[in-house]
Image (cartoon, rainbow, N blue to C red; front, side, top):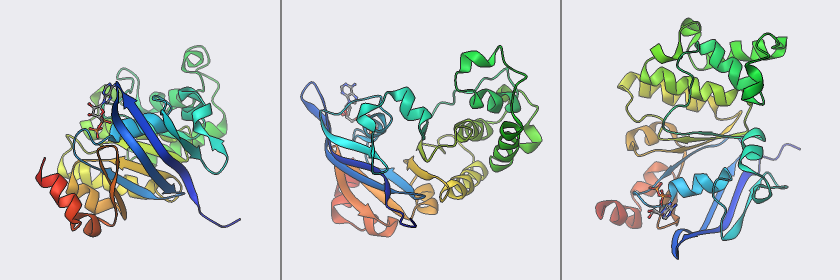
Length: 248
Ligand code: ADP
């Protein structure tokens, strides 16, 4: 089977908080291997959308499928995370006292509590995986440094590396370049672009120059629904999008 249909289906999803619809009949289809950027003004529903995909928030209506068969609404947040959908929050959750290598080692353990008693038992496959991830995230020369001594950008890449240790099919990334230097931003663009193909990458980001530099497809959310979808040029020239952003 060589077809590359959507890996993620979000269909007719509505989420209400005390009668207010944070998501209102949202439809989102993300292809296998795609890099998709999600933009939209504050309050558009971007965080709620990620919460629904990762099982943190349950919709009142609609369906969320991973591939054609896996109903994510039947899985716990933990099962979704272990089952192939990794999420990177803005604030990294790395262990600052541990080295880069140890953080990646820790991320291989299915149950993090077990790691503290089983430190010696990584398989050759797992150490190969750490070596390859550490190169991918550009931290080979920092591998024995405590994570707390890394730069802001390096910490973000380490967190992405920790997610990669779980071999996710889909990566959700929340504002990856917030607070980064220009050079770190460029390297992050290269990293996320290199991850697409083997993974579907969904990036929520406010930095429009960054979005333009990485995205082929952009989805604009507004009031809990999709306002526009297309290339950056298409959505930026869309009168509805211009109106929403000028009115912010
Ligand atoms: P974005 O990430 O695009 O800024 P959010 O998904 O955080 O948007 O929020 C969408 C809307 O839903 C906002 O108006 C927000 O105030 C509201 N909202 C989000 N979470 C909750 C909650 N737990 N309780 C009440 N309202 C919420």
